[in-house]
Every structure is written in C-alpha cells, then in structure tokens.
Image 1 (cartoon, one colour):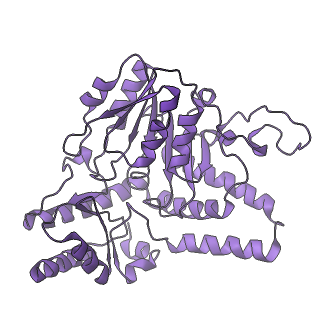
Image 2: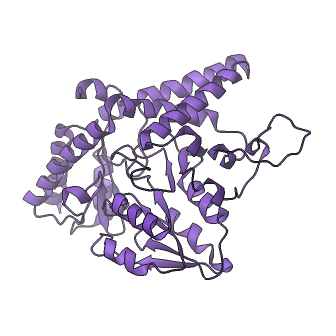
Image 3: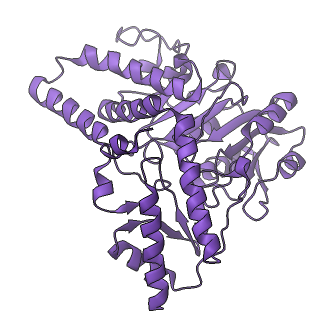
Length: 378
C-alpha cells in the first residue's frame, strides 16, 4: 500500500485530522470528479447519454455485489440503511405472535423498523449487551419457535464491537430464522461474505467507511429469500415490462431491482461507483490490516495515558471504531478538538475516533499531542 499516493486522494488530510469515518466521511477526489463529470454531462447534453448512464448503473451494481461476495441480481440501490431494513420489515408476511431478536445497543435504524411492527402483533426482543459486547449465548437465549428474524449490526456503532456474523448466521440457518445485517459500520473496513455468513438481508449507506455521498447505499437480498419479501413500494420499473407503459402487468422483476421503486439516484450511483473502485484497487483485506494497525497505535496511546477504552481489544472483536472515556468537560473537549482541526464524535458521555486507511501514524501522534495539551489546560 503506497500511503503517499493514497493520501493524494484525500484533500481533507491537508486541512485536518479526520478521525470521524463512523459518522460522515470526506469524499475522495475520484468521487468529486465522478460527480462533476456526470453533472457536466447532464448539463451539456441532457438525457442524450442515458443509455450509457444505465450501463454504468449496472456496472456499479456489480461492483457492490463483488464487495460483499453476492450476485448482481441480489443487489438493489437504496437511499440509506433504514430503507433497506424497512423493505424487509414491511415486506415480510408477519403473523401475530411472531418475534424479532435484536441487541439493545443497535443504532435506531435497526430498531424502529422492527418496533413499528407492534400493531401487527410482532414482538421485538432486545438482547442485553455486556460491556458493549453482544454475546452469542444471549442472542440464542432470546430465540424461540416464533422467532422469524434476527437483525444485528456487523459492527456496533457505539463500542465498535465486531459481531461474529458467521456463527450467528450458521445458527439462524440451522433454526430456519432469517438473518438481517446492518453493515454500515463495517463495509469499507472489514471483508464481507454474505454467502459464507448465511446472510439473507444486508443494508448499508455509502457515506461512512465507504467514502461516498449521503442518500445512496446498497441492499442485498439472497436469492432464496427474494420471494419471501413483498416490495412495500411498487413502481413502474418494478415489473418485467417497465417500458410497456399502457400494458398494466404487475409481474414483478425476478431480481432485487424489484425493490428499487422508481427512477434511481444516478448522480449518487456515479459517486458510489467511484468510491467502490478505490476499495477494489487497494483491497479490503489490506484496508482492514491498515486500520487495525492504526488502532493498535491509538490503543497504545490510551494505555500510556491510562485512558479507559470501551472497546473489546480482542483481535476478532475489533473494528475501525474506538470509543473511550475522558474525565473532562466533554463539550469543552469537543470544542477544543474542533478548533484544533480534529474531527471525532463526542456522544452519550463517550468519545469515538474512527480513522481510515489513508490516515497516517503522524496524524495519530499529533492527535495525542493535542489531547495532551487540552488536558494540561484543565
């Protein structure tokens, strides 16, 4: 990995220490260029190049499918993670008395779609996390004969805990339970294989670790689960003959495109495709290694200063997110970091840093220098 070349893709590195990719990421230059190129094309030629846009959309669909080890026909574009999860929640044929199992430390995107099923008589069962970790045994204990689905984040947003998707997926397959994954905090950091992990549904927006724009992400639905979900929104291009406008034939497309529900965000897809190309060039395994290496350096810095880390430090449970506690005025700390051109998240009484593969060891060291200066002030 040529770090110098990679950092040229990220102008943000000239302006600040950006350790906030678990929130909203800066755009690489290639994403900016893809957006500008598409906008210039649409401005100068209108819809003249629409056929080329359509071909490019399918290329990006294939790119996202390769990232998660899926087939292109199992992938749809969605506007965000919530939309992908909601397709599942609102599309299943629920029966009164069914239940869904989720951890109690999920981001709300993986909570409210399930709670919204209460009027249908569907129970949402929360699994209590233990010190930020979701224990497999506790997940299993919540499952019974009426459990239709288990939904979990690949990485928990607050603690950075990496769930064992393979073990959970194998359990769900054995029990005949559908398995849904919110992957927004792992795609772009950790390799993903939906087949190996027996995942039925996966959703992730592109604006965090995937380094793309808000409002465009990917949704995966396995071929075997396709017909179990009725599209909550059916549009003109959800059917097999979308351009036969006067022939009203509600025969749905046989693939995941049936869930896209109308004209696509083509500009967002161009941005998404440019971002994905970076991950294919560098390799997610290399990116994972790089991020964990930076994490080692950060954890060592906290250890030297006796700062309490909320994450598990077990290799198999780590991700790109590191959360820690400071016995200081967190608003003052947040303001100081902002004035010092450091991007991080202060939330729920803790601080979270989330560096990406283009960040440098020097940036880690400078972060700690700034942290030390703040603590000397107080």
